[in-house]
Image (cartoon, rainbow, N blue to C red; front, side, top):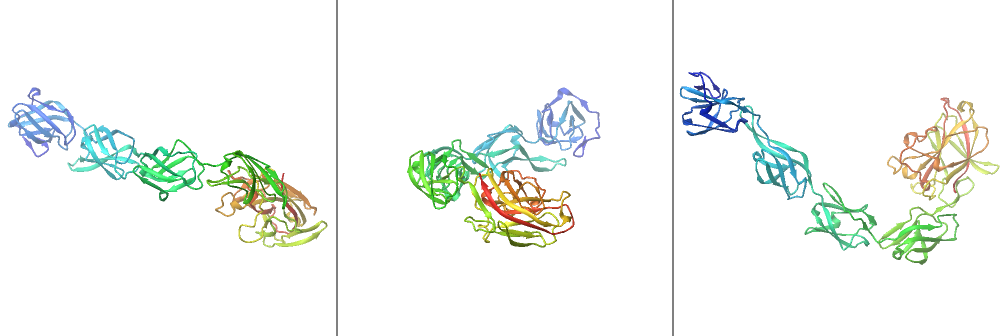
Length: 554
């Protein structure tokens, strides 16, 4: 006899092993699964136990009993209790852990919204619901080894979750989930056709894109020019968009929440192409005219030309050559203006010759430096002194100079746009800064052991001025030592030898570390800083003369 709900005890006779009297199937299972017991006279069975754990009888007849594997069952023989006798199975029933549905794979790995996805795996018939991310998906069909669901309408790339019930060790039924090892990707939009064409476009021309998943598009990229959702229309599976201003050529891309699709064929706008121009350099010539020859293609599109901001007059034009003239006092890029936009030369027309900054005698016809400005010197005095060859600037440090101090030339005005030298060149190669400097007097305590004063020039780039500048702060010239004998010394420094610097080394005379990727822009130099240093802690006075500052382009 069984007593209690889960233990076999108090049997009046020893169990009788009778292998032929009944069989069971399957031979292994987990708590809660159904086991079929087949034999004869089974209608008289009073209790069934798996080892010592009593099982729930689901159905019973003379030839078959169906029972549910009990919660606390362990691997053991199955016992059938009749009135006055107990039969035991010849073989053990293996009790397994509660199995969980598992995903072996799913297809496709990228799906459109509303597309069906097929999961293959095990025990998928036990799945109650499916979700992609936090969005519930509709199940279309399922079996133990395959489940088909519909990708939710608003889903983005995410994991697949399968929800199912399981029985705890205490017999409670709870819901849990299993998750895919990889994410189901949202298929990106794609273009199958661009009408009427993708090359030879004109600004404002309306294009129609056909393809897949175009409803996912958030923005359209014509190279670097972006058209937002307000600038295009989607309807009936197609997009219509006008070629935006500024578009030239490059990759046509569709931006979606889950990524960017690049069309395999590049777009191009009808624009001229500049192959070369002459002359490439020249001297400024006041009111004279300069004639340029430009070679290239598609010049029939050109409506006007300019050098920098200065318009030119077209002398003759063919599809491959333009002759035009403009003022010989201007420099900058060669610009060809068309209805579809402006094309500029890769390098500018550059002036050559001498370009004065300041000599304290003359006002020049260029935006120039004029003010000597104190930088971190407790005492700073300036004066214009008459010398044998003309006036020059004299700076006194007032007895407080103690190393790594500086002063700089600052341009006129306070608008932030007119205080740099407007020299236009494409790179620092061939560009020099020249000046004359002398140490009129200096206290002995400030001198190096060899009797010199450490010195260098620091060039500030207007594009890097301030913590949010586009480029690094400036450029260190080579460090040198000034003779202190009161004689004028002439310096000619190649800007190609200047080393980019960040703020931390801006006013340190021996700092030469560079910043990767920085580039000197001689046409936008804003401040020339004269940096002096001394290893001595003792303060002292020094008087420095400065004159004849200019740029030279060779």
